[in-house]
Image (cartoon, rainbow, N blue to C red; front, top):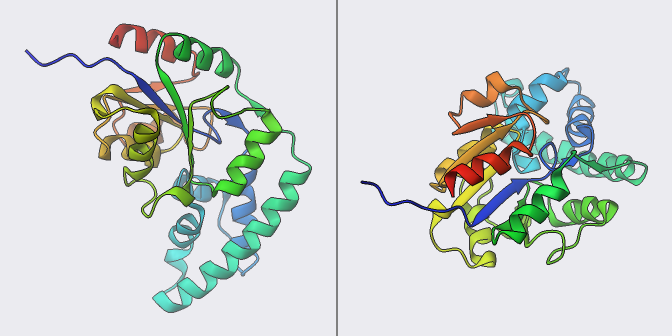
Length: 233
């Protein structure tokens, strides 16, 4: 009989999972890339770039358009620098909200001894600008923040989850659940060997797309997590 593991940490992606910013990041990525003469659709940007560290997302989206690695890298760096400027301007006027029930879920988890971590393919500056708009504070609203700046290898590598575990004092990956709105979130959870991986349909990718990564659950609302955690624990 296999050993039972209780969930003691839930690692949530930010944009599209806990933070609703109307895909402004991916719209900004699309705009920056297409300024170089491309015509990538938002659907392609979301599918290929969803959840990834953003420079890597730019590289992966643009890759089919270039035969030379050197030319790809040069143009990816140009597009990424432009993306940061476009995003900064977009964020200055953006109203950021959270999905219904997110804060009550955080409170429920923390009251029941389950740590809440946020992780993101954003750099720290972008992540903190979102949290400031929401009024969320580390140690009060949630327990730990991990961004692409904190690791050498971003998603789908497990590094950000391992940093979250270290920050939250969790040593067994089977006691961790990972929740995100993209295939790469689920792959990250699986590469970390998390006890649960969940895809949520509120953000970048559809249920059908998320299902290709074989998560343990696909949910339409974070509130469904309460029942899933209760069953697991």
